[in-house]
Image (tube, rainbow, N blue to C red; front, side):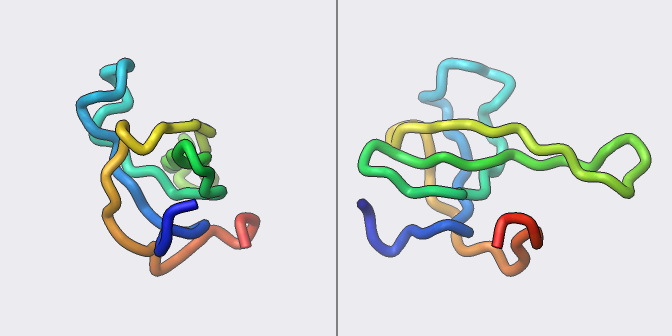
Length: 77
């Protein structure tokens, strides 16, 4: 496991990721693994009252650390 990363850390998907639509997306880590992270990419729903989340697993080589989230969705705590 890599310190200081923990659930709630924010990463950005870099250009080594093989699916172009994901490059540049910000990911909120939900679990830190020895090989990388499990996390979610969030966006507002159609009504702007809901939030949709896409789960994703990423290797360390595919992401860059941005920082710690100041606000984490309640259901992730």
